Image 1 (cartoon, rainbow, N blue to C red):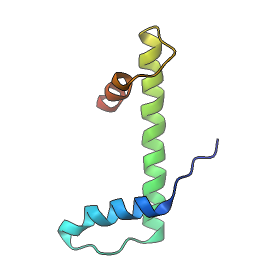
Image 2 (image 1 turned 180 degrees about the vertical axis):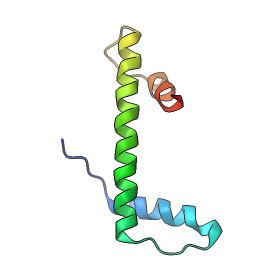
Image 3 (image 1 turned 90 degrees about the vertical axis):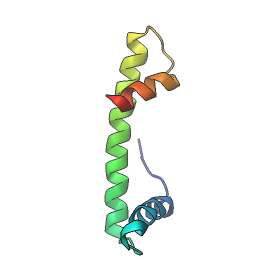
Image 4 (image 1 turned 120 degrees about the vertical axis):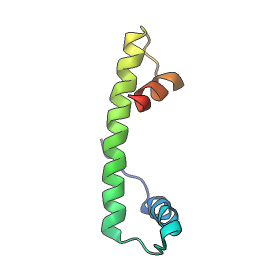
Length: 72
């Protein structure tokens, strides 16, 4: 499965996070690393959400499964 999403929203997220401390620019490598980190986190959340749905006897992941996975 190809996991891609546009870099520009990630750059904006990083730039906005840096504004309070005076960061105005974000390197391309920083944007790529943020993408990699978010994909890794989303994989873990997804797997934990699947486990929660399975534990509840469902084949559909619901909002509460995601909430539970994020809290874990």
